Length: 215
Image (cartoon, rainbow, N blue to C red):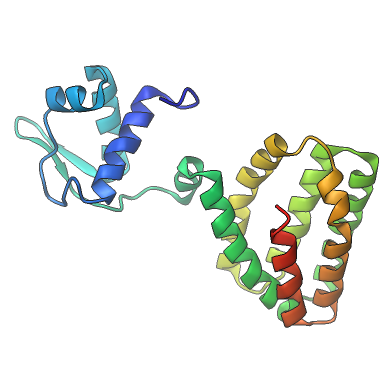
């Protein structure tokens, strides 16, 4: 199992998956502890901790002396918890969908003050890429795209994008060891800025899609 998370978290993920895929149906009784231990190949303490996690997340209810029951296939997990558990490929897919819509909306809704913030982040991105400072360059790239999101005129899109940013930032830090790709895509980012400045939603969308394909 994955060393980056605890055994109990891995077990809770497995059980959660079975709930979401309806292997364990809504209102059904979960297998007993010994049955789960045998099926998942883990000890009693890991099963109990996994059950506790899923109870806290709103998937299960423990009825003393009777058993553990599935009460929801969705739970009450926070958005942050979902991001933390998701695969990077899933995060990128969602982020790309958000960015395309943001690119269209920001071109229509941006203000002059927004443009100043976007321009500042873009200038820092260029300087950090030239200087080869990968961490600062990643932060500036994230700041540029967040500035676009902040200016899109939809607060929910803005906050969804913000919630994803720290996970993308962490992933970029593992993927990229130099600023080469950021330097190579600077011109595309400059053209995206100009399209937003000119309020050209169609061009903004097309340029953003081109940038996405380089990741």
